[in-house]
Image (cartoon, rainbow, N blue to C red; front, side):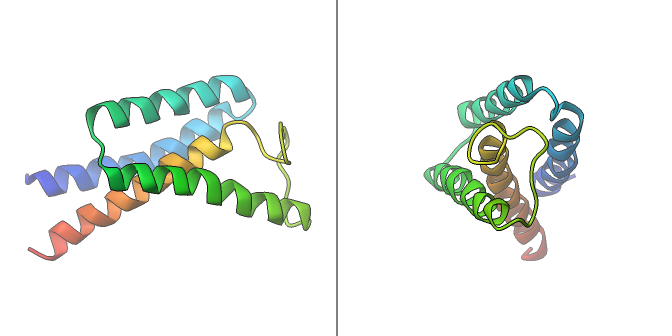
Length: 114
C-alpha cells in the first residue's frame, strides 16, 4: 500500500473519530477541550507546515464566528454554551477539522493525479 493511500485512510478515520469523540464527550466540555488540544498538539509536534497553521487558525476563528452569527439569528443552539453561545471545545474542533479536510483533500489529490 502506498504512502498516499495510508494517509487517505488515516484522514478518513479522523473524519469518523473527531465527531465520535465530540458526540461521546460533549457533556464534559473541559475534558473534550483538553483532548482536542492534545490531538492538535500531537499533530503539530510531529507534522506541520506553515499552511497547516494557517488552516488551523483560520478555521479556529472563522468557524465559530459563523456559528455565533447563526446562533444569534436563531438557526440553532448548543445545549451547554460557555461563551458567545458556543461550547469551549468548538473552536479547537473547527481548527482540527480544517486540518483534516485540507489533508484529506491533499491525499485524494495525490492518489487521483498519479
